[in-house]
Image 1: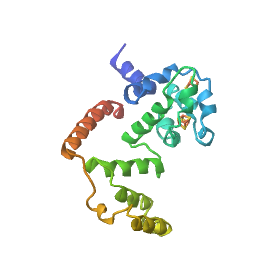
Image 2: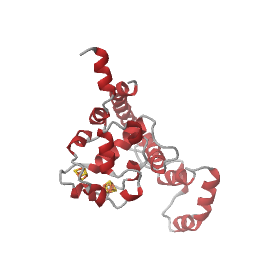
Image 3: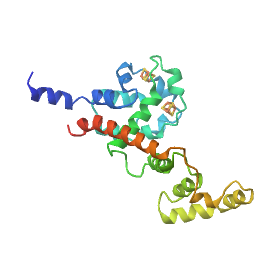
Length: 207
Ligand code: SF4
Ligand code: SF4
């Protein structure tokens, strides 16, 4: 087989890409398309593609449709599907793995709220190793723009004042907050993990 033919075959194999890059992706080929997961998923009927369909599309090489789908971002980790799958596929993990992989490749649909939330949470956590709840809450209020942020803040002002009164919220924590013992070490470990993942992904981005 020539190098070109081999490259072409490699390029066309989205299943292989999933197996090598997505958490629990090696399980996708075990799916027998019985549809139990989709029938058990409380939200699946409202998605573009419930899990069984996603797995079928992966095997049909529908890379853009799968990675650009919002379906896996809607998974609430209820584990209904895992509990019922006759082949015991870790469906929830695959759904989250696909979402994570799509995010790394920059293929998430625009304005995907779950992804925005996940990014805010990660940014908040990354610097100190601990979540600053006040800062996270405010950044979520303003996640969809300044005007929306003001509207949400006004809507929530009673709750905020109540929390202040009962000392459940300390406004000074916005600037201070807690951090883990070795936040620099944590950042170095995360940076290394990212470099390893990026090197692994790069070969698929360029094909
Ligand atoms: S329940 Fe399991 S085997 Fe059946 S379609 Fe879903 S993932 Fe595939
Ligand atoms: S874990 Fe996710 S995919 Fe599975 S049934 Fe629940 S919402 Fe649906």
